[in-house]
Image (cartoon, rainbow, N blue to C red; front, top):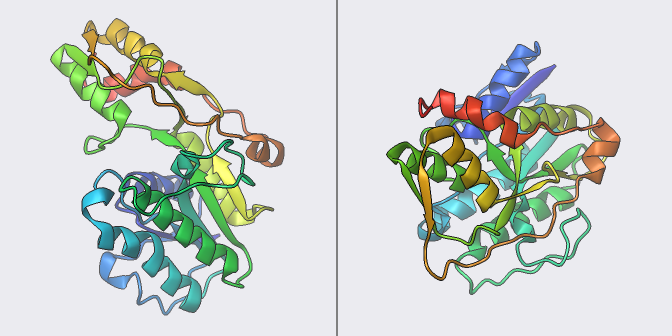
Length: 267
């Protein structure tokens, strides 16, 4: 099949391109200057453009990446399907984390800028009037990315120095999913998903304490916890939809840590 990946220079986009090409698909990767100049048929479009850790200091870039560019493509581009990558962060203040949950956001909260912009992008997808437009909400994606500002990447870098300092309570937890699982699911959703919205997650919460204990075991690092560190937890991410439709069985992130450490030469 023919596919187009927007945001292919990012972590998820880069791995998605590799997965699609490995599976024999023809993949077009527009450059930054080409993103809004797509006058060619895109086939199955995957929208991976987005900001992560620096969204608080780049509000205009965040809105462009999550809303404006996607809106232009949905309005004008020629595609067979369009998959918009969102985030399970939108469940941060919700009572539950299934796809039909009511969500809570506050425009006065700087941390909610990311969630609001992603939800605005989702809303444009749902109301575009175009067929085969879908949204995938990704949880915390695990894989080797030397420039990643994610929590797990920070832990890995600290482990390389021999000491980890946790800024949150060890009982804090998150849902993690391996990049290989993510890319395989995105391809299935993009090419033929039956629903408009999917959580792309493992459905398994891992505590900070469990992660750190395993990293210390593998690297010999030691760990301390910042006094008064807060407990941070999200609602458990529902994965019934991807399990029932795609027979999804997530790989164990904890079992993957030794391979990840080898890739960054920490072991």
